[in-house]
Image 1 (cartoon, one colour):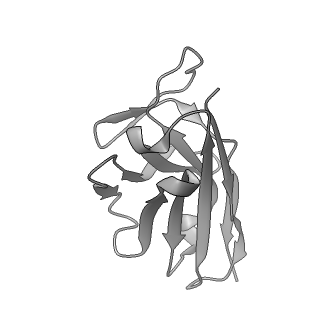
Image 2 (cartoon, helix red, strand yellow; image 1 turned 90 degrees about the vertical axis):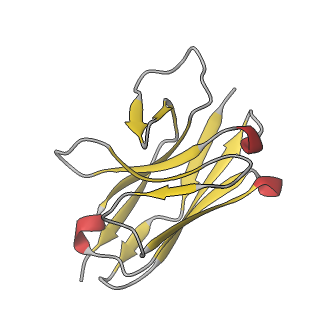
Length: 129
């Protein structure tokens, strides 16, 4: 069973940093792409960053380039999102997702040409003074 669990969210002041973690189970992380997405109230879910498989290619939304860094630790089956210089507009629920297809795919979001449909439960990030 594919399972993703996010952690690391919280309340931070503008300019601060957070590191989100996405712990994967039920599949081998090395073989699949992992993406970070976010959804603010009243807005659609949007792609933030993706890390690819063996070559570890990374992709970022323009709004986070230079501030966010995605990385993976295959030994721990975990992907991280380091978020620096946070802004109030970064406030959202952050989700990680994988392109590992299962019959349980319900919501599919496309980012950088990749389709993601297995989701974690999300972690809240609030940037406010």
